[in-house]
Image (cartoon, rainbow, N blue to C red; front, side, top):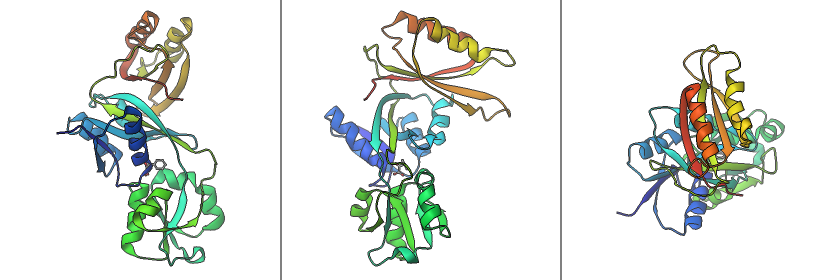
Length: 282
Ligand SMILES: O=C(O)C(=O)Cc1ccccc1
């Protein structure tokens, strides 16, 4: 059987575009498997059902995709980020061929897409009812299947073409440069030699220890290890407890100072998990 790669489907999602870009980059052909949710994609890779999975991680407008971060952080899931794929996301307002903008009463899309077009919706369709879909392509498919000219979806040009909808309004995102970063996941770590790699990890500070975060960051600062991201999320266990997601430039396979810093961080934290070491993509 050929290798399989799962993604947030159906066909026509931005995640699907990330899969195509990733496979082009690898110069490989794989069977692509569209699934309904980010959770299903992560679960299917974690349980060895599919070898690879691609999910959205963060974007320039709304920041991190919490559904992905929370699953990656969880101790139950042992899978790794092996690559990152940036996709320029251009949202379109899509409807049935006979629909008119003045008659749109309902807007359906993925929550991220709705958030990224908030100003447009406020200005042009302030009274429209908002409906949530599991992905943008799922929303487009819904408009096609329900056959209601009063319903419009936010999705990609590609999804419009695939499902035969027309573009009612072009490029409706509130910011022009909307890039979403997707990540490829696998049960096996990517073993790479480049010292300019990204190392991603998550940790929580020791309980009630003043200066806990300062101490952890000190292990990076001491050896001039460049931190490119820090993000906190609620631990989901106790109110006010946080876990921190950090990206650094460096590679513990080839740099002793990075290996030592990670060992120190692990030793001085309550919870530590390596999320992956992968090549930076410009
Ligand atoms: O629903 C999609 O098409 C996705 O790939 C998730 C998503 C939604 C909105 C912006 C970026 C990614």
